[in-house]
Length: 317
Image: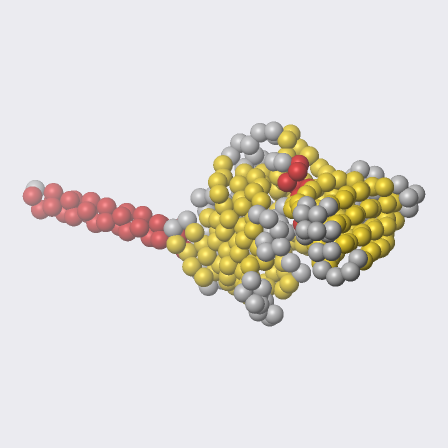
């Protein structure tokens, strides 16, 4: 009788041991592969964006829809219309608009680019295009909730980025050029579910960009540019401008005028001695086919302006 009990106990212990090994193996396997997450409407991520040319900004990215591209893509929008316009004219955030269900691929020039290739597994490698650059990427490490990836370009640029599976998106995304200068730093500050309210996506298109820096005699700049519609979505709803300006002391000054082909002023600004402003964002409501920009500079001056067309979509969550 004691032998039978001992045999039964041994079987139980052996079974429990196998069960424990299976649990450990499952846990290890779970850390060796990360599947693509399923986003829901209202999921959100708060990111800070840093670039060498512009002041830092913070944007809350929100899943506005999960039924884009015939039900194969999400729509990632922004909770602020001002921030959506800013990102449209500066064009430094590639992770807005359509994001595929498969691989969370971002669209560039109408083509889905797999910045990640799921399931994420250590040693996996793949290619994609981003910032109009070809990249070769690989998974460097998986540790806990974090998947560390690196992408390199033939020109010497590098992207270091980390997917956080507890947040279901990037915890960081850092792009450096061949000289080691950071061109974009995207860092996760917070995330959550169930965002409510209006969210926006502004489809942008570059129309004009220039910078002037003058410390010599008075000069006048006159430039003309043509405004056509979006290649696939028709006429712009508005034009969005972003500008930085600074005047030195003494008699330094800047005058900026933008007129349409009817000679109607769409934008007029004047800065006197010692005046400056940075990161000014505004809109021009009625685009026309041709614009003339005139800028006059006296003394020690600096002016940078970017203009983009914008088509705005909105969702109420």
